[in-house]
Length: 243
Image 1 (cartoon, one colour):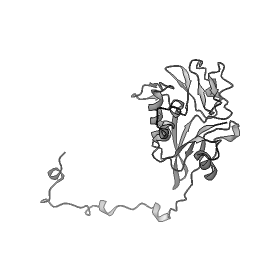
Image 2 (cartoon, helix red, strand yellow):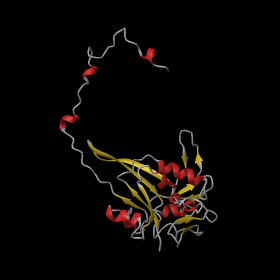
Image 3 (spheres, helix red, strand yellow):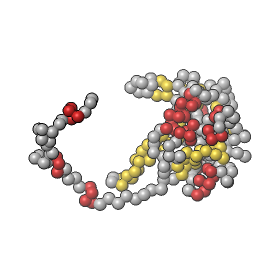
Image 4 (cartoon, one colour):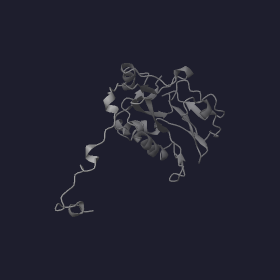
């Protein structure tokens, strides 16, 4: 059985949110859209997203690092969101393993969101239906697109190639090789959902900080009397710059 999925390399993700914006752009106008926004330009904007990037720091000063963690629906092989749906709106496709939502059947009860241990589903406040990543199912099978473009929008947009896409059940696929060779892991395996999406771990580099590097010294240029002072005959910034 084919199981399409994403493999995300946390070692090269820079948290630029290109995956978030490209996902929003493609899907809000696609079959899975619209992805509504509320108070988009106000004090407390909110909206519906298929993909989000969480950023946090790990370690203790001065040995700290910033981690960027993209998260979307993991297209579990045993998705808990499917059996709890009272209308059958949530379902898993047999042909490619993608988990989808039938908006015509969804009643917005949020049972699937409560069952999902990853917090990957969101209620569209305008349409009152649950929405989630579709792996751009309307794009990856579009014969009108060149073969190289038949990938999820987030994969194509990533500037560091941190996101890979393919069949994790095919041992010769790019994603399967990456999982094997770089220690790929699934998220929260203790839940028994067998997420299809995998992550490649960060290869942590220890930074050596010397005690003297932590001491603060005044910049000599900022000490009174040592500041550089141009001669009065020299041109000023206004003389040489066109504003």
